[in-house]
Length: 194
Image (cartoon, rainbow, N blue to C red; front, side, top):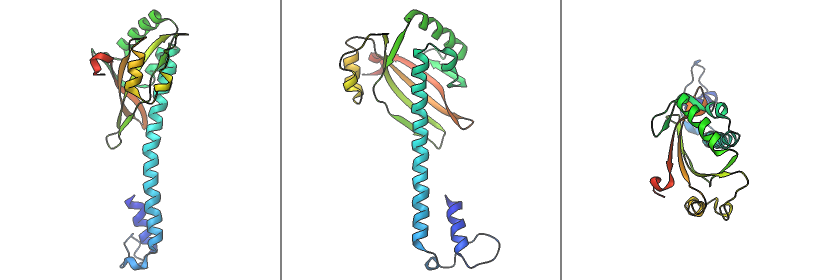
C-alpha cells in the first residue's frame, strides 16, 4: 500500500529527480485522488481477507463432499505434507489407514454441520475452523437441525438427540500460496465443552 501511494504522490510532484519523492507540499496533491487510492487499497485488503475466508470455506465443503464419497486420497490432497491428526499425533499415512477402516465401518453416510466461523491470522499465513458435525447413515435425518444451522449450540443439542456429535478443530496454513489443512483435532462434543 505504501509503495502505490508513494508512486502516486511522486507522479504528482514537480520534481524530476528520477526517484520517487513526496511533494513539497500536500496542497499540491489532489486530496480526492489520495483518498480514492487509500479507500481502494483498503477495500482490496478487505477482499483479500474475504477471499481467504471463502477459500477456507470451499476447502471445508470439499472435505465434506470427499468424506461422504469416502475418497481418502482426495481428503489427504487438502492437507500439507506435515499434516498431523489428534489425538495421537497421527501422520498422513496413519490417518489414511484410520479413514479407510472408518469408511468401511460406516458404509454410505452423510455429514451434517451448522454454520461455523473462520478465524484468520493472515500475517502468519494461518487460519482455524472449529466445526461441530454429525455422521448420519445415508437416508437418515435429524428433525429440526436444518432450521438451527445458524445457531451452533442449539444445533448440537438437537443433533445429540439422534446422533453422537463430534467437534473438529482444523488448522490451516498457506502452502505455496494455497490454503491447506495442517492439523486436525477430533473430539466428542461432551469433551469439547458444549
